[in-house]
Image 1 (tube, rainbow, N blue to C red):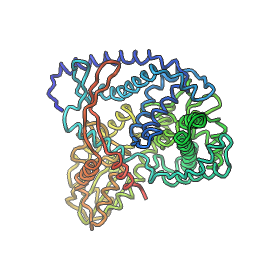
Image 2: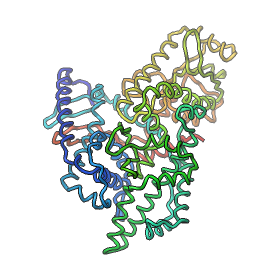
Image 3: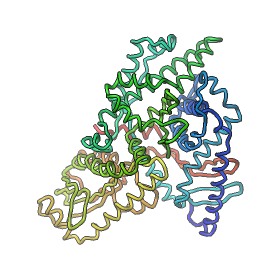
Length: 569
C-alpha cells in the first residue's frame, strides 16, 4: 500500500476504469438470465444463499458461512433494475421453475454476482478512496496508505458493532416439524401454533437495537408505534423460522429416504427455502401472533415488500426487500426476513421513496434520539455530569460533559445519519462527520477563560483551567480515511463504543474526560485487535477483465460476541 503512483498515471487508470465500467454495465444488461421468470431466477439465488447459510445441504460435514449468505442476498440488490425486466409467471411448482435455469444460466448468475461486487466498489473508486493501477489484464484497486486501510477496518468494525443484535440462537424442536411435513399442506393445529408462537416469543424478546426515532415521536412520524413494529417484525421472523424449520425437516427426509419418497421430500424442501405463499395466509399468521391491526400491519409491510417485476421498488444499496409480491402471493426469503428487517431499513426506504416526508418528519428526530440514548451512558462515567443541547454565545453544542473531580470536560457533536449500507450512504455519513468536526473546531478556538465561563454557568461550579476534549457521536460509523483524519485528536464514538468505555471505567472513582479521545481509540483498538484478521488481495473476474481488490477479513464470531457484550440492558 503506497501513495507514490504519479498523478497522471492514476488519472489515466481511472479514465480506463470508467470506460470498462460502462462496458461491464452493457454486458450485465445483455445476460440471458433476465429473460427468465422472476420466480426461477430469484429462487435460484435463494438456493445459493441458503447453501452458504447452511454450509451445504444434504452433507454431514458442513461449515456454515453466514457472512457469505448475507452478502449474497445483499448483492441481489444491485440487480434490482434488471430483475424488474423478468417475467411474472409462477409455474406449477418450484422444481419446474428451477429447471428453466440452464447450466449456462447458472454461469451467468455467477458472473452477475461478481458484477454486483464490482458495482459495490465503484462508487468508492469514483470518490478517490482507492489508488487505481492498470495491470496487464485489468486493474488493481488498493488503499493508498496503510493508515487508510487501518481506518477502513475500524470504520467497518464500528458499523458491525452497531447492527441489530440477536442475543442468542433459536433452538429448533424438530418433533413438530417432522410431524408437519407429513401432512402439509394440511397443518396440525397444535404443532403449527406451537412452532410459530415459540419462534415469535423468541424474536420478540431477543432482538436488540437502539431506537432511531424517539418512542414518543414514532407514531407521529411513521404512522405506527415502535411496539407495533417490533411485534410485526417478530411475526415475520417467526414465519421465516417456521419455513426454515420445515426446510430442515424435509432435508432430513431427503437424507433418510429413497425413491419416490425422497423425490417428494426434495421437492418439498425447495418450496420451503424459497416459499411462495398466499398473501392471506402470511397476513393471517401475523394477525394471530401480533394482534396488530391490519391497517398498521400494511403500513409496516410497505418497508419490507415490493412488486417482483414492476415499479416502484424499494430495494438498493445492500438492502433487498424480503417480500416479493407475485399476484396474490408473497415470494419470501426466510433468511432475508431475519436479516433485513431492522429499523434502519425503514428509514432507508422512506428516505429513498419519499425524501420530502423523510426530511420533514424523520431527519429532525434522529439526533435527539441518538442523544437520548447517549446521555445515560455518559452519566454512567464516574463523576460525570452532562448538559445536552447547549446554546452558548450563538453556538449550538449537542452535549457538554463535565467531571468536577478531574476538572475535565468534553464537547460532543452528534450526527445521526442512516447507518451506511452502500457508498451513497457512506458519503452522507462522512459528510456529517466532517460537519461535526467543523463545529467542534469553532468551539476549540475559544480562549480557555471563555470555556471556563461556560462550565461555571452550566454546572454552577467554580471552575478554572478546565481541560477539554472533543467528540463526534455517530449512530454507526464515520466514513473513509478523510473523516478519520479529520477526527484526529478527537473521540470517535458510537453508542456501542461509548458503552465499552463506560464498562471499562466502572471501578474508577472519577473519569478524566480530557482523556476521552485516547480512551475511545484504546477501546476501538482493543475490539479491532480481536475482530480483525487480515487484509488480502482478491481478484474479481468481471466479464473477462481482472479487478484486483483489497478484501477485509474479520472474525465474525468475535464481532458477534463483542456486539452481544455491548447490548443495552
